[in-house]
Length: 144
Figure 1 (cartoon, rainbow, N blue to C red):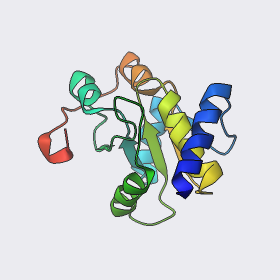
Figure 2: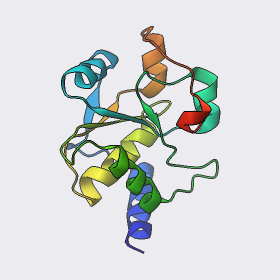
Figure 3: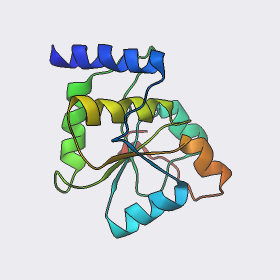
């Protein structure tokens, strides 16, 4: 029930195009630095079709947030995140196609759930690919 309220707030933020100051934006180079130095958890929230079309960032975890109709199950998604995290202070970096969805989900985590150390890839996977960063094929074992 609480997550329906969060999702409603999230959709309001999208319509107003407001993003939280607490949510960090990272360049592709900063993402790589966080991954190497801080053992950041990189979560690709795009759809399976998007993962197949472009590949995923190496060592990232494909974990779809919104389905094709824009619906989500935040409780289930957060449970999956908790299973992937090494500890509650591990940085989490969200990735989507353009940065919009990852910004919305990041705001949900930072503003509504008061989580810390949440970031997203600025301009998303599009920016990653434009800067000629490495990708890997998403496998069935990863949920693709």
